[in-house]
Length: 338
Image 1 (tube, rainbow, N blue to C red):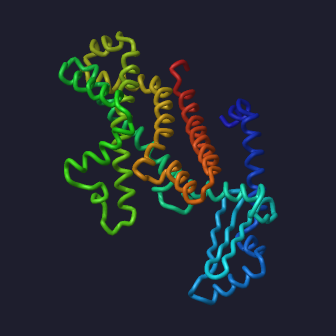
Image 2 (image 1 turned 60 degrees about the vertical axis):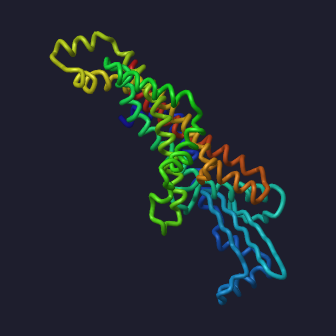
Image 3 (image 1 turned 135 degrees about the vertical axis):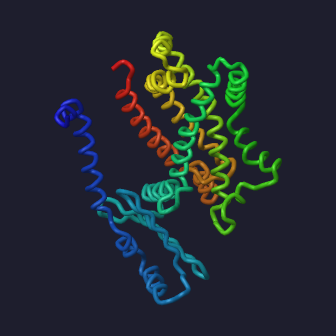
């Protein structure tokens, strides 16, 4: 099996190995935090040393390290304000107060913050991926029930399922999120943050995340319902008749014969739904959830740099490419044509 894989994908394996080797070498050569701080000016060195023996800190140090490059920013407050920035790359330390090194340092800082490095799961890229994954999981579960309801011979169930799908496919996701986050609590007299421990500093964000997840899942369920329905109805009707002839009832036929075959046909459309939700997740900035888009906007507002949107685009592209690759492999593995 391993020999077969090597023969089938020699170029891909060699390319991946070369890239990995380059990354490892660059990571090894990357200067450490202490080396960056040792390149500061003598005056800044004295202040750093003084802070080590004092409870009152005069130097604020920000250190961000990505895989192959790192960035240190030092600033002082008081009568004499000072600011120094440095980038470490390929065994060297570069002043990053101006020029290309400054831009590189900003990119490291922005990317570090958007990825939510050393933060909990409710930050940046992790929030975006978590929200997307949970949304699609719940969307598929809800969509399966709605699809079965829509194709049911019971008219009331079919009409209700059809009405749900029509409503959520026919109204904007952003408005649906506003209704869940603002309108529903207003009608029933509660706040989303109250569902969590009052002493939890993240209660507001957890409440917003829960509201966003509910809105996104309800919306995704409507789209997944059509995906599931079309996959089920693409199965030859003769299989229904054969199952009936074997004595299977409707539930047994769907669970044992039809749905297992339908899953293969759903994969391409589920992949598209996942990618769409991944990009639509940027809408949560409207309720101040700290996803990639919200953090980018906050950085831009505080630092006045529009460069922040470049690493944001790259992060979205990398995440999309990664999950696109995963779904592509799944689709090929379970292709109906194999």
